[in-house]
Length: 374
Image: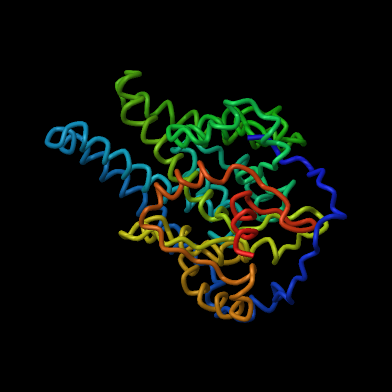
């Protein structure tokens, strides 16, 4: 969970990759229907309300699920809560990017309404997440899922090396490891963590943290002030929501073939082309507002296209990238009905990055497979 260090490979021994001409952001935008950039506050709010109603329905149903189906039903309910909780997060995600509406006050208000109940401090998350989009696939600045170089990996303890391999780690990597403990970029709850540099940032941290605390207290009160009930019906569902969120963000930017760039090779469009659309199926993509199968469009225009237009924008981006389909920079999409097991598999096999060429890194397994193919 450390920030990637600069790689000390002798670059004189590495080849240079010739990059084909990539489309500009302006060219990509011109290819997308104009209505995809329209943000309708009423439509956006309707999704916020819908997600609240779905969560309310799940809470209404849980006594019956548990009564008739026992612990197996409860486990299924936890997964459902994780999916719907992640959908609610995605609405707040639009708010954080400004794609919810053109009104900052409304984005901030609805962002807190979406994120506080799932204990995600809105303003601190907005600050940390923005850098992931601005520097996607940048070795040093993209901290969505910190890149691990061979040097980093060899300097780690056994626990640091293999923690991600343990399946249960996925339930902990969002809350408490990322948001509370603050790995890798600082606690989102502590106003003096390294994430915050100004008084305004620290005040915003306190406000968002208090909003989360209020929601947690309300949940505790509704639990009859029982720690057991609070944990069982509130905190464990949040751990499942955190797991789903970790899986989403991990799979959108990970496979054996994606490239990661050192500063001298990185470019905005080049970095965004390493994003992968993944179709989960079973209606899950729609429930989670197409953040899974519309992620490429989201990454290119994260402040401009609301989630309900992502699938309309995707074919235009795919067409614009069509000349690059046989290169590393073409449109990428996978069908992953086995999304959970794909996530577990990658956590075992994608251990560290190594140089593929000068200024360009790839996972060790990808580099080794490429060498065998040649």
